[in-house]
Amino acid sequence: MKSQGKNAGIARKLGFLIVFVSLCVAMLSAQPYVDAYSSATEQSMKSMLTGEAFKAAARAIEAGSSDLANLATSKAPGYKAPKSYLAHVMSTNPDGSVGISTISQWRYIVSDSGKDHVVLQLTWGQNAINLADVGKRGSLFIPGVSVEGKNYRFLIHLKTVKVEELKYSDDAFNAGLFNAYYSGAPAKKSQYTITCEVLAIEDVGNSVKLGLQMP
Image 1 (cartoon, rainbow, N blue to C red):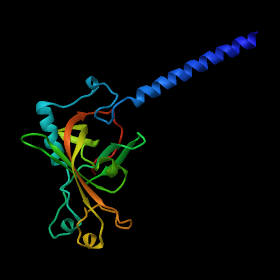
Image 2 (image 1 turned 180 degrees about the vertical axis):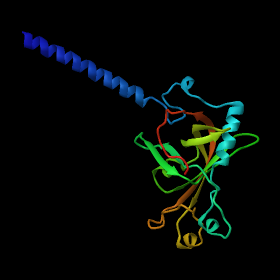
Image 3 (image 1 turned 45 degrees about the vertical axis):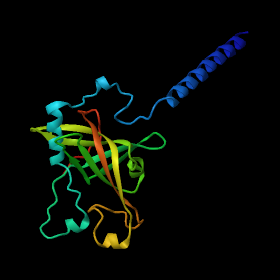
Image 4 (image 1 turned 180 degrees about the horizontal axis):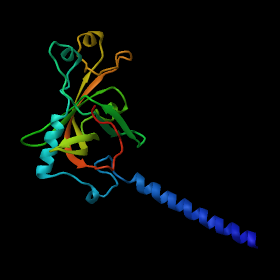
């Protein structure tokens, strides 16, 4: 009798667990597309910059971004590369995981009217695939931006608005048309120049632990 009662209790627990998991799966499958900007974290808990704080951060980010020089420009006499921040571009992979690439070829463009923009240059790979369609969303994490003498860690939330593909050819490569950090020649990979609208700049403090800063 005790054994039967025990078995019945286990069966009830298993039944409850199956129902609970089924409900969770149904809820998750009903959720809209999620990225770093529209994440499960309550928006009220996020520190989104506005007004003068946004403008000051944007100017500092712009000053620390790349000029996107291609190889030919970088090899020209007298060229001196700007001291730009390394950044981590993040996007959502097809399986729902987060794709992260560390890049130096990005540029922030402040707009005096309308939306600011970020231009990313990515060699063909999962992050490029994830972002290389108009309307796709992602984020750029910059871990050490100096604003008025104080260091900040910013997450810039982005939406793709324009995509340009530079397909590999020996002529294009030998002419130095790819960016100075391009390494996709052996596999003949395309380079994507992805222009994104800035949706928001978030001050993440120490809540994001990716560690690279500009040298």
